[in-house]
Length: 230
Image (cartoon, rainbow, N blue to C red):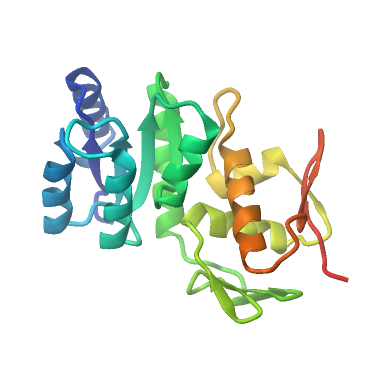
């Protein structure tokens, strides 16, 4: 199996050096870019398996760069590293193509755990039957495409995984712990809004395609349920 290639995009030399050292110690190939322009040069030469992207770059808005990286490679996993804590700013980054985010300061152990999980997920092949249909929703698990009434929904990788897991258990309560274990496949370190942000974005996209915005129901203290259409 080829060693995964991770591109670090970070202008802070202390953080950049620490990340590259940690990645090398874990056996990954890595490159470090301090500007958006330098990052794009690396990506044009070789699409990375995973990008660690700081949003606060000196020459380019991180969200704009995220969007450009996603346009170059749909398969690359993009994890945003940000000091921005307001939810709408995180949602903007996710809508630009990011798969996940960590707010600074973060623990290196958590970052590495998420990195391993994302790389395992991106390399995995679906074992289930190819198609999953619930009401007007149809998922092609092999092609990773979702449609409502034959109109395709543009979903980020984690949004697709989240929708597939919930829809595959339509009508059942799925706990937050199960979703984190199955969709992110890691031990979560402390409280996080990652799941909530992804559910919020997924609801919005379903509603934009004419679905009921309450299709994914929140059950306080228990989890979520994908409601079966009447």
